[in-house]
Structures are given as structure tokens and as C-alpha cells.
Length: 258
Figure 1 (cartoon, one colour):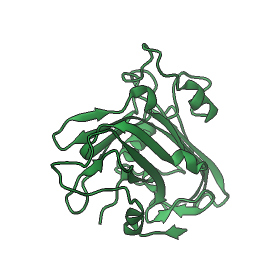
Figure 2 (cartoon, helix red, strand yellow):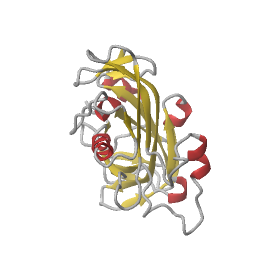
Figure 3 (cartoon, one colour):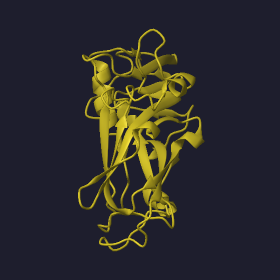
Figure 4 (cartoon, helix red, strand yellow):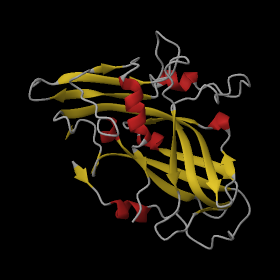
């Protein structure tokens, strides 16, 4: 396991700019790079590495993929910049580092205090009627669609586990999505962009802003709800456990501050 120092990673994000809240050096649109990083507590996530949850189970993550969408930024005046919906759907894959950097361009210059994005696909915001986005091929290529039921897998989290009562490595599968009106697991994540010194994130033309976003996947099991793998090794269209996991994931993203 590779432990790390949040402050060191913050220092690497040189595009996280601080300046006077009342003005920016450019009024032309700018760029924001979101770097998604995965952890288990204080350790960087490694596929194939062993971790332990509070249920006393040792687990190995073999695959981690998830969908984020509907990105928007709120400025210091409280106004929202909504990133174009037809460009706002992404599959993040732990095995493909290139997918973990999202570059957002043509963002209105300004000082921003909050980042909001969706976990999964919200059918009420997906632009089906306009036909401007067809995310299905991307999701299908990443195996983020159920073949037997319409809908997206918001997260594909798979591996194996052992415990005192299950000493032999045993597979587990967690696929969470929404299914009709009765099982809606889409969640919005809200993250503050205010630095530890009280400055907002500045976006301007001259240099891309960079923000590191962490996803503590250990909270899939140990968030507001405690999930035991042994209690149910296959969670998919599950009206009891899937919403609990979605609620856990909603609390698992964070931007570290000093």
C-alpha cells in the first residue's frame, strides 16, 4: 500500500490559483482540469492490493469503473456555469489513467467556489430528445450497460474477499445504477473550491486551472452505511443495498485542504 500526503498532491496541482476575489486577469474563457485519484483511506488504491473494511473483511479490488456527469461550477456571485450537457459524460477507469484526467474547456472566466457533478446518469437531464449525445457506445465499450435490462451501471466495482469465516478468496460484484422510477440511485456530489486560505478557484484564459478530486473507495463499504461483502457478494438490481452504496459514494469524493 502506498500512503501519501494530501498536501504534497495539492502542491502538484499548480493550476489551483489564488488571487483577488474581485477580478481575474482575463475575461476570456479558460480551462479546468479535474484529476480523479482513488484511495482507500490514506492509501492510494492499487488494483490487486489487499485492504480491510470495518466488517473485518480483507478485499482486493480488481476493477473500478464509474460514470460522472452533469458538471457545473458556481461562482462567487452564486451563479452557475453549466458545462455543455452533451460533453459532460465520462467513464472513469482505474486501469486507464488517461480517463482519470478530465479537461473542461471554454469555461467562463471568473472566481468559483463550488464544483458539482453527478454520480451516474440522471434520466431527467440526459439529452435524449435533442439527440446531441449518444453516450451508449462509450458506456457499452466500457461494459457499463446491463445487457439484460435498459440502464447504465453507475459503478462497476469488483474483486475478491476473505474473512474469518470465508478463508478462501471469493469473488464479489457491486454494480449500482437506476432502474425505472422506483430505484433511482443517481447522486449529485458537491465539493467546495475554496482554498484553506479562503480563496476561490480562479479560471482564466492564460493558464489552465487544475483541481485534484479524491474518491475514497473504502467508503463504498464504510460510509454512512456499513456494507458487509460476506452478507451479500453480488449487489446489482438491489432495492435494499444499492441505495445504501449510492449514499456512501455520495460522501466518498473530496478535495483535500491543508
